[in-house]
Length: 70
Image (cartoon, rainbow, N blue to C red; front, side, top):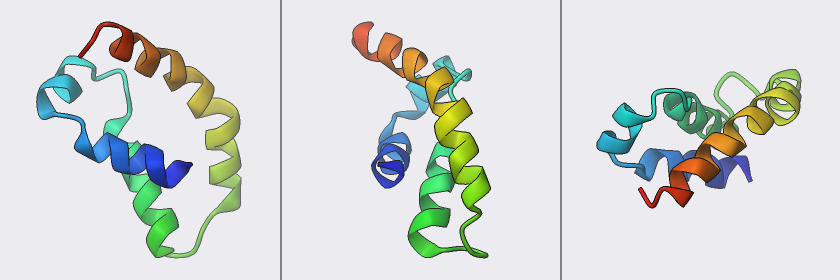
C-alpha cells in the first residue's frame, strides 16, 4: 500500500500540494521510492512508525481534501 500511496502523492497537482502543505506529499513519495528501490536498505522501524503514527494523522487530511472535491 505504501507504494500506491507514494505514487498517488506524486500525481497530485502542484496547486493542491501548495494549498495543503499540512500533508507531507514529498515524504509520502520518498517513502515509496525507498521501498521500491531499497535505497540504503529498508528501515523497518521507520515503516512501523509510519503505519502507527503518520498514516492515522494524514488519513483524515486526505479524506477532507477528497470530500472538498479537489
